[in-house]
Image (cartoon, rainbow, N blue to C red; front, side):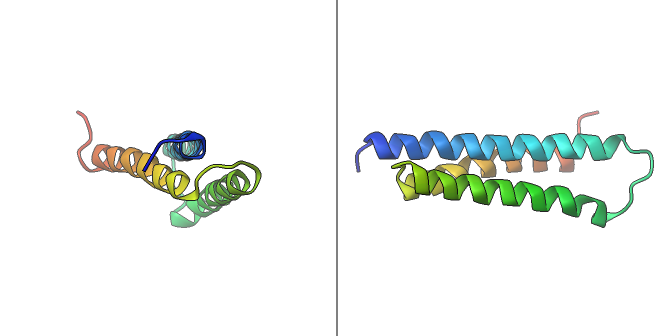
Length: 97
């Protein structure tokens, strides 16, 4: 397995899409936490759906219009999002005092 141009493109785009996705998620959560009265779980649905559409479109457009390797792209997207998601989950479970 070599890191040729398609593999590197897949890694770069996957990490970029994952990082943008988690940044949007963190920004949305910060905005929701500023609201004095939470409106329940339904208030989170439009933002979550928008982020999922963004991720799916970015992933699809990257596959269609570049020669990025689909396995490297998908793997790096999952790893970059997964690492940041687990870090965020750790902060939610064990908040700083």
